[in-house]
Amino acid sequence: MMGGSPGRKFRDALQAERPLQIAGAVNAYAAMLAESAGFRALYVSGAGVANASHGLPDLGVTTLHDHVEEVRRITSAVGLPVLADVDTGFGGAFNIGRTVREMIAAGAAAIHIEDQVAAKRCGHRPGKAIVSVSEMADRIKAAADARTDPDFVIMARTDAIAVEGMDAAIERACAFVEAGADMIFPEAVTTLDDYRRFASAVRVPVLANLTEFGKTPLFTAEELAAAGVQLALYPLSAFRAMSAAALRVYRAIREEGTQRSVVGLMQTRAELYDILKYEEYERKLDLLFEAERSEPS
Ligand SMILES: C[C@](O)(C(=O)O)[C@H](CC(=O)O)C(=O)O
Ligand SMILES: [Mg+2]
Image 1 (cartoon, rainbow, N blue to C red):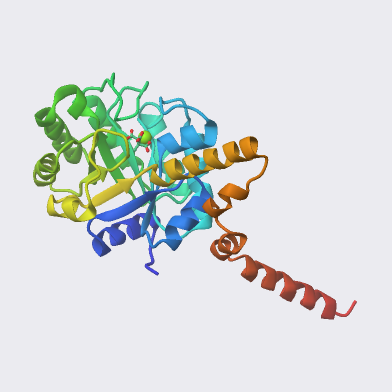
Image 2: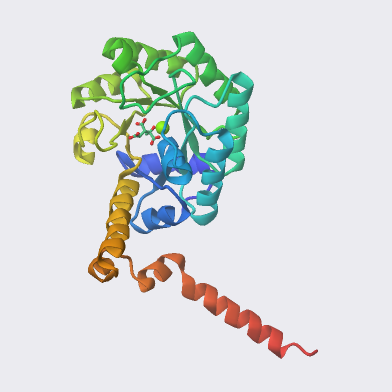
């Protein structure tokens, strides 16, 4: 187990694996599943917080508190470093400072903050609008200034490719690094060559967002490594799979009057307990009660 602050652990994980694969986890149990599958880092997706926890679209409706709460639940359940999506930072400079402090207190290792206007959209949908380079640079400065742990990672996301094109997006990314961003998340990249261009221009780690049904092809880790990408994000992959499976189960029960045809889709009780370390808890209870019984009254 690597030691240090969550930010340190995230930076160490990046050294241990190229690209560092980061798994989206929509709740604490999903985080445990990802940990058991061997991931070294986790992601709290803004879309995940909105869709999975609140039944809302990813349109800037959720609050700092909603995101922090999700991070806290996950960092309480697993020891892996967590990258948290904070959308546009939840307000002006003071709000962004508060966002960073609250995220550090909740145990996050890193945040990504984007250059969309506050009424943000999913990065893979049309109709995005972005703030000026200087306004976004101010967001980064406010975030970096609020850091209470120097290893806490501030990642700048730019949504500019869809709005202003590749050249402008690369120029922006360079300005954000200048303003203090530790890593860059270019959103909705469409080719490996574009990743290569980003990686060689910014000289800090670049993240590829491999969200399904979006604008970025599902490049492999190997392809991304060859293009100089250092972080590979799978924000909603497990959530999409869980949702499809859940709907099949709900429908089968309604249509067939029994769940028998879909039991094969389910994780068994034994598998669930294995992930939760249920038996360890039971043993602890037994020991506690034994101790109580043997205490003289
Ligand atoms: C990465 C992302 O910001 C998220 O909130 O998970 C989304 C993912 C998605 O909507 O597929 C985004 O790319 O905007
Ligand atoms: Mg998001």
